[in-house]
Length: 137
Image 1 (spheres, rainbow, N blue to C red):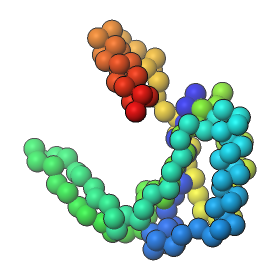
Image 2: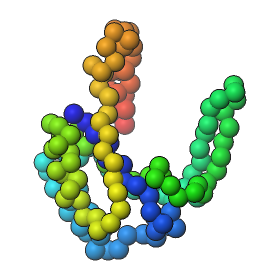
Image 3: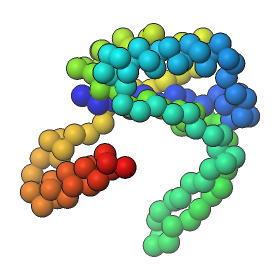
Image 4: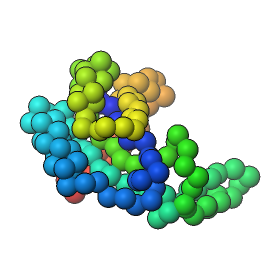
């Protein structure tokens, strides 16, 4: 099972405050442990929303809003993409993350099997072809 672990934004992350050397070292050690265990597939920190934009759809025409955005529980400061056998295993890994405060959210990523008959053989082949192309980059 694949999970996206979403690290929620904070006042510091939105202000562009970079983590300390100690936190970077602890995070590096944690990430290395997950890589060696075959759990971590990706992980990145994100720039503050002041450097981002939102695209909203509706009324036939997309509209764009540029950041910064008001600090709320839906802002993201970073993420991991991990693969574990269960949500409980993902939770166990994230309990070990070297955070002193803040919040993360763990969400399961859909697999092709989750889409059932709506994912026709042609669409499945397209999905597999695109994933193979992404993997070779």
